[in-house]
Structure formats: C-alpha cells, structure tokens
Amino acid sequence: QLETGGALDLNRLRLEVLSGLYAAAELAALDLQEHLLFTIVGAALYGERGTVFACGDGAVMVDGDVRRLGPFPGNAPPYLAYAFDESSVGFAVLHDGPAGRVVVATDGAADLELGACLEDERLFANPDLLRRRLKLLRPQDDATVALIRRRP
Image 1 (cartoon, rainbow, N blue to C red):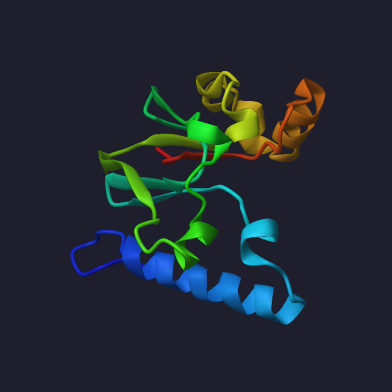
Image 2: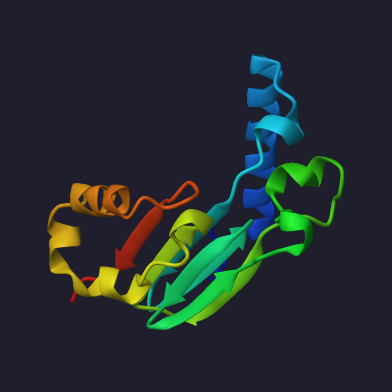
C-alpha cells in the first residue's frame, strides 16, 4: 500500500499482515509464537525510488550496498509474530531512496554472493535457475532470495 506521495505505508502493511497471521493461526489452531516465527524481507520500487524493509533476519542489497540483518542476541530475531506480545515489533526500513537493483534474502541465503545474482542474466530469463542454484549450495537454514531490477 502506498501513501499519498508514493511512500510505502509500512504501519498499514504491518497491521494487515498481523491480521492475516492471527486469522490463519486461529483457523488452524496454531500457537502464534511456536509456528509463525519467520522472516519477512520485502521491497517496493516506485518511480526512481525504492523502500526496502524487513522484520527478522537475512540480508538485502540495494545497488551494490549489502546490509546483513542479524545475528540477534539469543538467536531471537524480531519476528513479526512477537508483535502480538510486544507492540513495538514491526518493519525496519533498511533503505528509502533511489533504487535500481535490489536483492532481498532470508537468513539461509544471507551469506551468498548477492551481487553475483544480479549480474547473471540467466536468473532473470529463467527464474527456476535461482531455485536450483540455492538447492546446490545446500544452505543450513531456509533460504529465499528475490531479485528485483528496473528494466531499461
């Protein structure tokens, strides 16, 4: 959701995601903090700008600048499900400004060479190639990567 003026409304996104998590947990009779602890890393590009945000651990790269999220004390990242007990948990804005090429990754893929992913044109022509590459690397934890770039 974009606010007036093109900015990403992360508070609204937070509330919508929390509402969905609560409904899913209630429907499936799941304990929120046992089954719904996961990383959310995202990006929205609009105009020449971009906003990159996260709640949890992982890594992001914006136009070559890499930022790792974590490690966190006690190996306890600030997952969004904790917001049900701690109202201060939410999305951290990692970048808000000009952006042309973005990689977002969960913690299992945080140690990969993220820049090389954007340079390999085959990954954009055949997105399944990225999944196969991650499988060959056999990360120790769940690994998700999304590549985003502006077309010329």
